[in-house]
Length: 112
Length: 117
Image 1: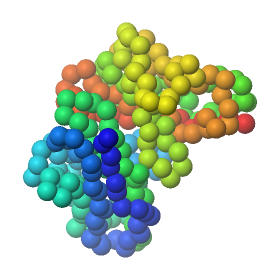
Image 2: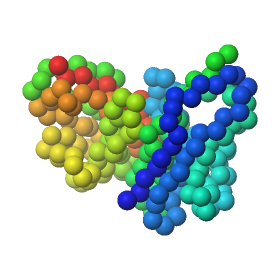
Image 3: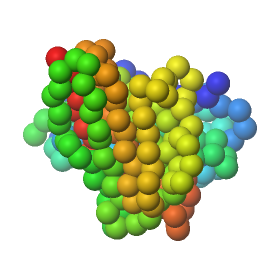
């Protein structure tokens, strides 16, 4: 079945550091890929997505590229801020389906 | 736009009682809503897909008689945990897909923390 594996957390960085959160997936066909973010006390919000190979999703300085050859969708940001502290979830959905399969989540803490 | 609310945000109940959790799409209509369960430091596990005007579709291993789902209107789905037990304690999250717009984007509620004593 479909699955998503993301790097274990927690991840702690200093402000302005470079961020990478790894995400790999297993799926039949070519799924759509998503990154969701959950800020403390809030629901999940869509951060970015990509729907086909080599697509790059970007938002709020975050980027992720859909890599079919490595079945990966790593999240990156060049310079993190304290306000980026949250839990980040990688997810996929099969084409034509609406159900999401989530990774385990990675808690990110940014220190000033 | 695309705001989803849940009520209550937190509930504590005694073992054996039933608890109802509401999920509302505040500024859009949704024919499809989803219910997830999130254990501490773990991912979201899809419990069921709620379809307006029809029966919910449950994921394998989820007891439909224990977790009753009703999607009575295009803006409201409810999850009732019947005869709750301590092992049902968890964080329950709903999401909704707008009737119009991009069909692969889910909008999530803030979650409901259930504690069963």
